[in-house]
Length: 132
Image (tube, rainbow, N blue to C red; front, side, top):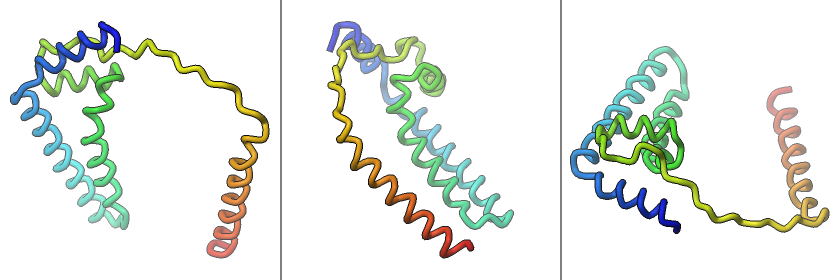
């Protein structure tokens, strides 16, 4: 890990305290109540799969804080939620390591093409059997 990333992580970790965790927890609970309200409203409106909205909100709220450290728009919203001006203003710098990939031979794509064709055949059979 390079020095810039270490410095960023040290500043971030030094400025996260109980107050920030409490504010993030309140934001998550508020999001859960909002998703429950939207899910209930959709259920009352007659949509049978309204629990999917609730599940999507639930997943997003717990994954958001981890993804936000590397994406600028998400990180700025996270800083506003946490309310701490001492946090770094920019998201975590990217790693300077480059991973080189060797070109694959042509025959290595054949299993993927085969399974894609099988998926399309199964999809065709399902659509033809249930919808036609």
